[in-house]
Image (tube, rainbow, N blue to C red; front, side, top):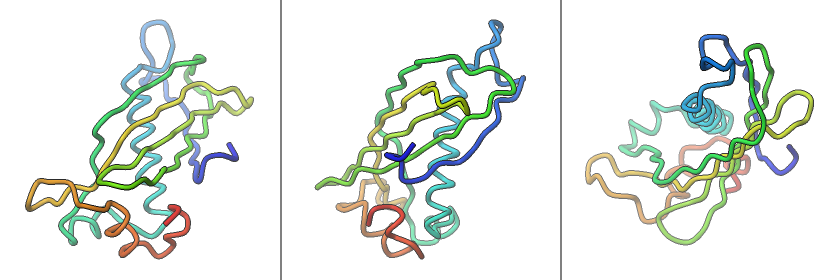
Length: 141
C-alpha cells in the first residue's frame, strides 16, 4: 500500500458479516471512517480539537468498489490518503488490502471541513487541519 499515506489494521469480526459470510457492505464505510479518524489522530488531530475550533470533517460523496471477499477472521489494512485541490473540497482515496496482498475494496470520496456554527464549508479545508496538526506533513500539508 505504498500509495497510501497511512494505514491501520482491522480484523473482520463475525457479527459484521452477512448471511453469505461476507463483510456487510455498510461495514466497509465504517472501516473507512475509522481509518480516516486514525489518520487524523496520527497527525496529531483529535476529534475534540476540531470541535473546540468549531469545525468538523464531512463526507460529501462516496463510491465503493467491491473487488474481493472479506470474511470473518480476515486481517485487512485500511489505507487512507487525501488529495488536496483548490477550493472547498478534497478527495479521499482508501484501499482495503487483505493480508495476502489482495485488494479487496477501493473507496473514493469527496470531503470538506464544515464550519459548525455557519453550517458551511470552510474556504480552504487545509487551513484548520494544518493549524491543529502536530505532524501536518503526514496529511500532505
